Image (cartoon, rainbow, N blue to C red; front, side, top):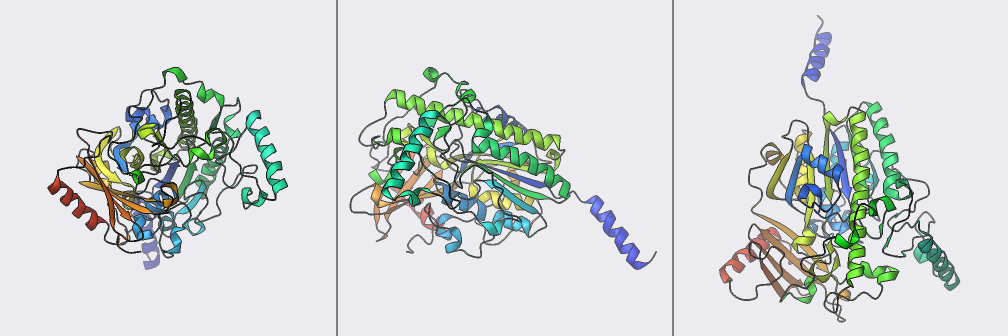
Amino acid sequence: MKRRDFLAAAAATAAQSLPAKPNILFIAVDDLRPELGVYGASHVQSPNIDALGRSGTVFTHAYCQQAVCNPSRASILTGMRPDTLRCWDLKTDFRKHSPDAVTLPQAFKANGYHAVNIGKVFHNNLPDHASWSEPELSIKGFPFDPDAVYRSDDDTVWIEHRKQQLTAEGKQRNHIDQYGEWYLKSGASEAPDVPDNAYFDGAQTDVAIRKLAELKARNQPFFFGIGYYRPHLPFNAPKRYWDLYNRATIPLSPNPFLPKNAPLMAENRNRELRGYRDFTNAPTPDRGSLTEADARRLRHGYFASVSYVDAQVGRLLNSLDRLGLAGNTVIVLWGDHGWKLGDHNAWGKMTNYEIDTRVPLIIRAPGMKPASVCNGMVEFVDVYPTLCELASIPRKPELEGVSLVPLLKNPQRGGKKAVFSQFLREGAWIAPDGVEYMGYAIRTQTHRYVEWVNWKTRSLAATELYDIKRDPLENVNLTEGFSSLRQNLAHQLRVAFPTRTHP
């Protein structure tokens, strides 16, 4: 045999003996908190996500790096923390300060994968075109940012009236997206009797299913990012999903009050909810509560939206099975942060508390133990190195997480001893003096400790300490005692955030 033929035959034999590169199905769900059937919430109808969890590993104590969309997504997709990226708000593109960052899909693209996306994977207003092999999939008839799409007569009539009003005032430019589509928020929820694809998440699932068939035909490993918008406000979902629930029996929050002794900057101000016309005058958490009727409507709308997205996930996974792709596809389903549904008397994300920083994370990987539950603490920055190891892609040195593959193989292994989050509290929402505070949080197996720093002077403004074992809902800030514990946790914070004194 000639040497050239021998080498070709050897290469073919080696290729046959190596497992195929696994595909990656990367499913992001906006504002999804870990209140699902597979997380023990029997009152929530989420059969498809539950089935995914039963076939993979459910991480019960996963934490995001910052409880707001843009920084959280930037962290999971770069494997770096907000302080490293200097990305702490909704308007900063992570590439402003880290132009050479190699994102998760970018790393896969550089290693022979075809990387595509649809929906909200990166922050919706800050897509990262360098991460993908082709332009983001779009859907005709939906605005660039399809959060606030309304189908009920009441909302569409109001929106048309508002368009005319803004046009007459010459202010319409502020409410039209880059494609010339109007973007207006009306009410905080609606339940019209429409098909699933009347809203973006159903329509994008139609497109995603067709794309999966195209990706299979390419005969090339793929990284497919799919970002669902619900259950983000407004809670607009087809009536059939609202009908799954009896509003009168939906459980209300067990702690509809501010944490005792907590500093004011620790709480969000219902900023997001107050952007909808039926909640413009909603009180801030320190000045009042919503009526029980409004609280039940919002919780009903949130769970209906979860069930709506769950149905789309089910359609997507069924398509994966039907195409014969499931056996060689790693599936990651994650929510970018938690969400308060009356907890701590607030609605929305944007705090350092457990209710906002704890997130759903489910990973199903070929060859790993199914039907597993991992109770160890993990972080979003761990997802990037995990997927690299599963796909035999070299780990980049700048990644700040650790691979979760050992936990996928043995979920009973201990996770991290501590996880870290942070939140930049913009001053305009707190006090008229416009002071901004950064809250740095450490969560151990027994406690959560937070330091609030004046973001301009870097001076310490306030602290919080919660005993997770005795006070799992974090209702009482321990203001006295525990000096040695405070010193230890403060030291760990300073080690975890070495650049915290930098402007």
